[in-house]
Image 1 (cartoon, rainbow, N blue to C red):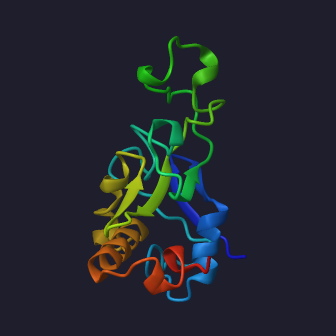
Image 2: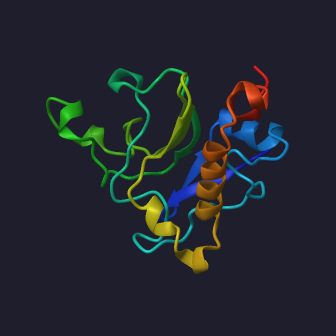
Length: 169
């Protein structure tokens, strides 16, 4: 199975989930989300915090309304306790709620399609957008955004591609 390294927060990489590894390895043209070479770092430079995952982070959470069919393409790894959950998620704050110990202390890259057409692509980090101008807009976050935009504009659906994001189901 292919390996795909995705955005990082400072020195903390976002690692591919099994779904993203399948997207990378099975979707032959890789045009839906990533045409980046396997193992390449995506988002390892930026205008704020030197990476794609930082400042404010967000992750998928079915309890808060994330659709069950959402594909998590990548997840941050190594977020420290500087990142705390929002107060709406907890009744009290204690040290063990920071990014180093809390599974919600992360940034996810996720995508899902809407039954009547359309879709949602989400990167749970405010620093992601600030990676786009790096290297004259010739960088992996820009490639990912371009691929997602072309996919959404094309009108391709899950069925057109033979399964979710090109995967057979």
